[in-house]
Amino acid sequence: MKLSLQRGLDPNTGETIWLILDEDYQLVEPIQRYLTYLSTSKSPNTVESYGYDLKAWWEFLSLKHLDWRVVELSDLENFAYWLRVGDTSKVVYMEPVKAKRTEKTINRAITTVSGFYEYHTANKTVDFKQFERFFMPVGISRTRFLQGISKSKPTRKKLVKLKESKKFPGCLTNEQVETLVNACHRLRDKLIILMLYGTGIRKGELLGLRHEDIGDCGDNTIRIVRRINPYSVRVKGQERVIPVNPELLQMYNNYLIYEYPEVESNYVFINIWSGEIGQPIHPKVINTIFSRLSKKTNIKVHPHLFRHTYATRLLKAGYSPDRVKHLLGHTSIKTTLDIYSHVVHENDLREVVKQEEYE
Image (cartoon, rainbow, N blue to C red; front, side):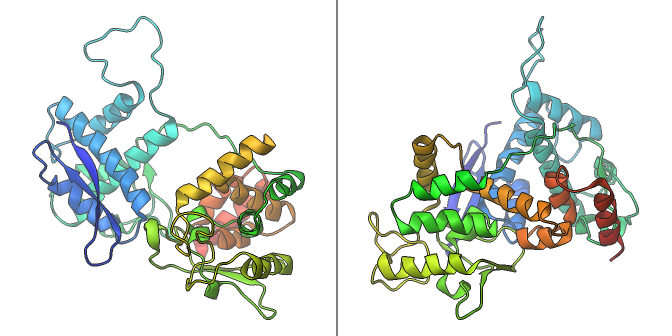
């Protein structure tokens, strides 16, 4: 069965939505219900990724002649293998098969499928218990099945999960950041670099910044606020207030004085020299800026690299992992420690995890 994932717009909110269609252009109702549910809490980009995962699951079920309502743990294991190497039912390979997807991508797909069945089990779309075996319960009651990972409760261990290689994405040196800033001729682009470096915010959070979020008159902070923005830009993590250096706010003021056009706009980063002047810049513009900077400076750089740089700098300076977690907007300390465990002392890791479990 060939499915297609189509982008659409919600007529009431103007938000991006994702539709999963079959060969007759009809909604695949079980998947669509789950994607609609996800859209209330996840970003459109995340929902799109989940949509592609479930599209792959449906194609796997069709290939294996399985009913989505009658599957077992072994089918999820076979799905993981299928994602890894493709369909090998009709081909015998004499040499090792090259992996088609990374362990991280496959684990995300497994998580998506598991969440899909959690949703339908909780909503009684399906009425049986074998889907609970997708997880190993550890200190969590069945009545709380859909509530997910709680800060004060132990997590459930997935029974199907590939081991991922630990590889830190890296970070930038102060000299590299200075080189990148000096390579920019426009204050807006310099401010983008320094804003990412000085706050560790995500690209979507950067593009969603409004003037009211920027502190002034001694209030040296940047506020990250959840709201609807153009191009499906939104805050992915938690709302928070981030302290910043006064020099960053001075750069912001210079940008407003010397480059910001005379337009009515709530957004900090807008089109100034091309496109529709005064409109918030598109995420692709950010990608183009950093692509050009990478070629110009021979420094391989992208927006998220500044986030890793920011977190690493704070941890090495002695900030507690819990404080860094807050500044990054992570919902769980485990996310912070999973990425930055190489920076945090082993004893501190145990103490932080223990503290969160009993708060």
